[in-house]
Length: 75
Image 1 (cartoon, rainbow, N blue to C red):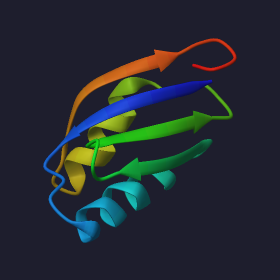
Image 2: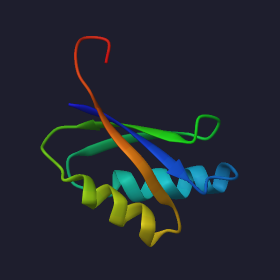
Image 3: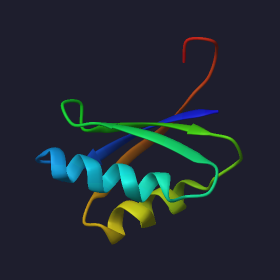
Image 4: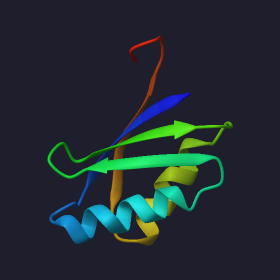
């Protein structure tokens, strides 16, 4: 499963690394944060509640503005 998380508060590469580290600390998550798009692409090996992403980002000073699930081969 793949999700896209729009993130508010990303300003620099340090922010990008901090947000990515927070998301990757969640069990079953492999995340890559794109600073230019202010979003993270998250690959899940198990079901993770959206609130877990919101809480993880909030703890390091960011806000998950939206979380969308991508379905299909190219989703």
